[in-house]
Length: 150
Image (cartoon, rainbow, N blue to C red; front, side, top):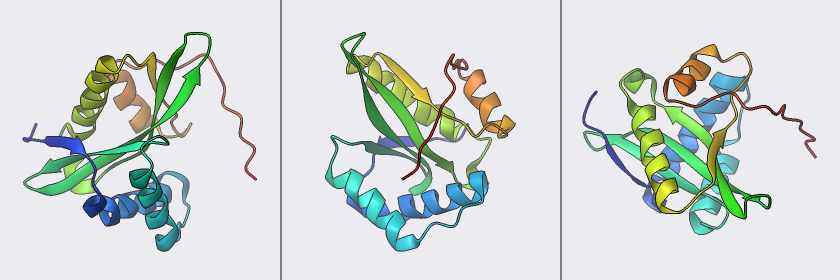
């Protein structure tokens, strides 16, 4: 694995994070995301850490990958779960341990912050991503996700 620097994202990273989100939407779901909307969405999270946080992985000073976490209150456990979202690794840095490093970084932070669990959802046909998540110790959950987009 290459030397990866992991850190919380800053406002200076917003354009790169928006670019990652646009690319991820196109690759994973065939969606075209408006660049202005993508940037505004990233900036909203960076302005309001109570709704989420972005983290980046850098290689040689260049952002190689990123992810966002959002929060879910677990009343049965009186603790928070984190949802990993907006995962993206630039193609030239794939299969070099970038996501694994980001994931480990988030797990260590979650343990320090007494988080109940770290979760994510994966596109049902994205077998490559599912294999990565399983290799890192994640297990498929018992729930089926339902959506009602308004």
